[in-house]
Length: 215
Image (tube, rainbow, N blue to C red; front, side):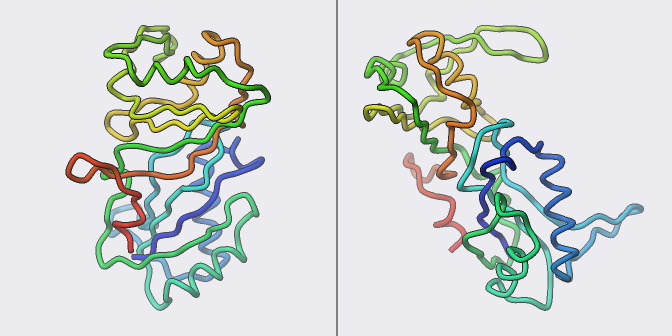
């Protein structure tokens, strides 16, 4: 299996995950990569994606795995980039004997948020709270959600906010957090100002970049 780390930036950040998968698979066909297919009644490409970011959020750390043959990871990277839009270009490729199932092993994501104004250091207290409830929309209904156990770190540096939030089975949407911060602290952060910079796995109580698993 070959796994790519790719971007989802600029206009591409507004493309849904379902459509992103279509673009990825069509790109593989244009690149003439020999992708393996499932053996079911309706065969489909054996491709795998990591947990997606909300629509409009940009990302520098998306992962796309492909079961394929007859090509090494460097040639794969070259052909992929020649077949994909600029906002989805890949920056690194990895080879694994077996599918590491990134969507299942990732438990946190790092985000960098750039604001048009200086941010309050009071925002950092969210991560220090034993419990902290915000309003979130769930299937059309607004509910109260305790996000304290899912906020691993918040750091304000003038006009930049760095966040480490739960991802995966226990998931905290970064846009929900930013929407609350805008309302609570009088900020005007846009959804497109949010960048995912890394996906992380927990190992013996600490986090490490998923790329350490892939290398």
